[in-house]
Length: 380
Image (cartoon, rainbow, N blue to C red; front, top):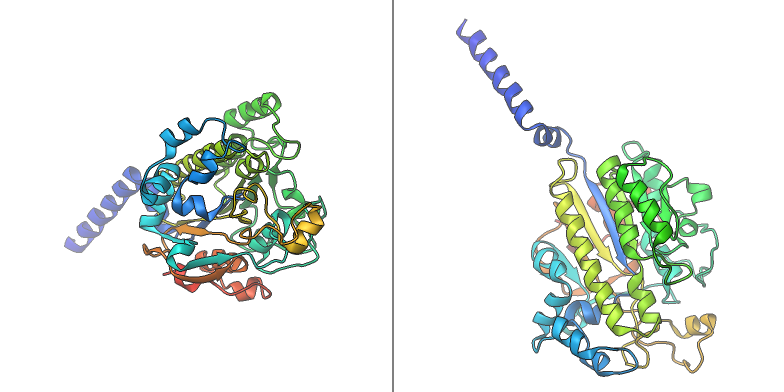
């Protein structure tokens, strides 16, 4: 009788816990991991680790209002400048996770492909290997299979993988005609799972200014991605913000800097929302990377390409390509990421795919046999 009463009391207590903490109980029962991979197109490591570039602020070719940029983002100390420009990256990610790419501190990450521009870079990030035949940014269907496409066909991930991008080439990079992967990019609007917010985003998309012919403004990409997280809860999501690269190509350093700051704010909202949702809280990894670097000099800063890449893109007066545009950076935070801050060493862009898969507690070698090795130091 005593045992029966104790069992009844235990069962009653368990029911109370489930009623009062349904999200936490669901999280405890489901130990699966999730991933959000984000890329910031063409953001230089120099700004990530050093903040605004004083020479580019002072260069009237690139900065219309140097006083405002200096007042907003400037500081005598390097660490203060970078924290003003990327407050979330430095106050949260770099303290609770890892960051790579500060070449002044023996931390190196580089592009592996021979071209040093976007399509080859995204293919490298998403497949873990280099295809030298991808030598343009044209809308060609990618013959290579990304790790998102593979996951989308695996048990536990089916219909739970999504991609969002500001650049309209992403459907081709993911080869949606073959992969069937849900990709919202460029000037696409949402066509399913229409919540009140996505209907609003569709309306705004039709009214928002089109600053570039192939890239939409990032707040739309961010809005669609956030609403998909809220309403559909995918296990894996890829998000690519694009304004930084296009403002740089427009020779506008102040707009490039403002766009980088806005992107950091979007990352902050993304991460803090993930930590507020029971499905994602405590079991979601956020990886942040970029597709290429930029030139290291004032003349070269707006551009990026290797020597053969400059020829392919038709650059005049660039016999040496754009030195420095192979130099990139990487950051990550999540339950499987140690709080080590800056990691010293040498890594490649082609290692991102395997590292992303390993963060999901999967075997990268079995899923992407041709992919480069995992960045072991990034994981616990």
